[in-house]
Length: 258
Picture 1 (tube, rainbow, N blue to C red):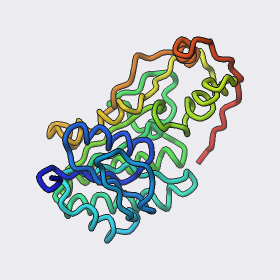
Picture 2 (cartoon, helix red, strand yellow):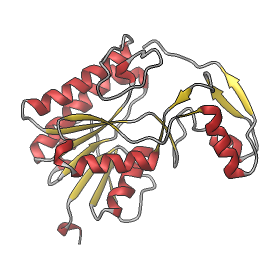
Picture 3 (spheres, rainbow, N blue to C red):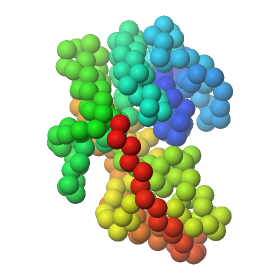
């Protein structure tokens, strides 16, 4: 029965949240998914409840009894300054009240321009855009909450997503669905530069490990990625799987100075 299992609460039911739920279920955890509607397709064995992570009372109520809480929430870019700090505060307070670990899926925006140098956990936060600076402030806030003993936190960073349910990415709706239906892939940027891509099940496994291992806490981690290749080579690999090399339609990348 569920009451004999360790409760893991995932806020967010996007590709990360659902893939993480699948991974945690495979590890024998009791999994509770939370979104605002309480509706959506979820893995068999998980429970889905309606809740609002932007409201502290809701987040704390749904986190009660949890061993690990995962922040897999997201917000539209234009709403980041308003919503993300509130979500951060509520996740920290909810984990602290429950005595739970807090695992956060994070991005690479906080590093800013690296001039072609590989990003590692030692790369300084050097973002100059408003969006990047905000992500840096949030990451610092999570780690500071751990340092002062308020909550036990681990951050897991991923590159561009691809894989199950991923549509909003450079390999998302304009690549996989297109080539599978015989249409050209819409490619962004220079497809001959080396690039890291994060396979969604690998992201889920990485986050699950961060929730299990005490030595992961208080640190920021880059989640595992496949060997670095160019986007052109990635499309070749897709072509090998479908038996036909995809046609490509280049497009200029839209950059939002946020």
